[in-house]
Amino acid sequence: MSLLLPTPRSAGAATLATLLSLALAVASIPHALAAQQGAVAVTAARMLDVESGRLVTGVHVVVRDGRIERLADRAPADMPVIDLGDATLMPGWIDTHVHLTSQLSAQSFMYPVRETDVDAALRGVAHARRTVEAGFTTVRNVGAPGFTDVALARAVERGDIVGPHIIPGGHSLGVTGGHCDDTGWRPGVLERDYRSGIVDGPWDAVRAVRYQIKHGARVIKICATAGVLSFEESVGAQQFTEEEMRAVVEEAARHGMKVAAHAHGTEGIIAAVRSGVASIEHGSILDDAAIRLMKERGTYLVPTQYLADVIPLDLLPAPIRAKAEHVLPIMRQSFRRAVRDGVKVAFGTDAGVFPHGENAREFAAYVDAGMSPLEAIRSATVGAADLLGVEDRGVIAAGRLADLVAVPGDPLRDIRVTERPVFVMVGGRIVKGR
Ligand SMILES: [Zn+2]
Image (tube, rainbow, N blue to C red; front, side, top):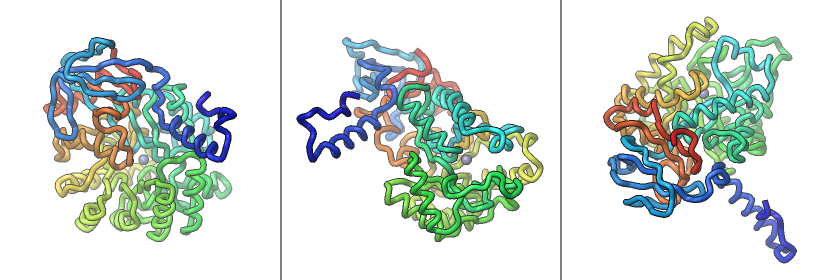
């Protein structure tokens, strides 16, 4: 705090700039810094170098003040050593598609009229803990009511609650009556506008982007097409025009931010990719043209595959259930093609549709679809970090955030060990294990 108070001597023309840069530096310090002063070395039988794909032995990861200070080849004598034994250490995982403040249930369709944003935020506190304990040290939250995910991100960074680093998206942006709107109510109930993400036309969309960023969003999520868990007619229909999406992407880029596009249908996927979004979420109905364009533009696919195994169909209202039964098998086929053809993949689950904390089950779904275990792990480390545009995580190396996860045995032989992490550290703070 004292850092932010100007001394009489520093008051002057440069003061504001200095204060701003200090404030930014303080804001970017990981939340656990305060909790974990001093140094500790973490070691295990194996460390996975996600860049080379090699399992390395004998490495001690020296952590100081929330960051990885260096990698040592023997135990340092001047600090405590955490030896995890027969385990594999790797960078903390990143889930690029979660909904920390929601949990699908028979009642959840009524939440918008029965609950306040505070209910959603408090639910998010428990979900954040479960997520980080499952090994996910960073999440991108793509769609939350009332900036509740911005509040959660701040609470984590302050150290008030235990959770992953959260990149919040605020409200999703969508068209009136579309997937990101609340439909099915009488006129006058839950009517929304740009302040809660409902926009029509490019300028309204630009205004909404500015409003989201003003209130703390760090990524912009749009609903390019219709969706499954909402009451519109068709799951694949394009909703935003390409002109609207282009306006969103260009405005976000002016603020240095990327756009994630929820998209199921082929036309909407192609329009979103052409407009310059960084990632296609779900990507359920891909054809050759969509795959070619995604590869050409370097657009990431965020596959959300595991949910197809476990979505509680019995809980869904009939029209929504019919949409899910139609599109989920197609989504699986599309993903196999995308993997085969080499589309870039960033790990993302849609946690909240299934229970938070089961995120790692997505790894096995990727391996089932044709990825190697290493490729699956890379999608949740270097791949996801690249999509997020963050260079301070995704690998274990000097200077990076001390975000670590360890699993029993060898994940390159059995990817399912990722579902049973034995140790998790986030920003130097141990949240699971010794
Ligand atoms: Zn989602």
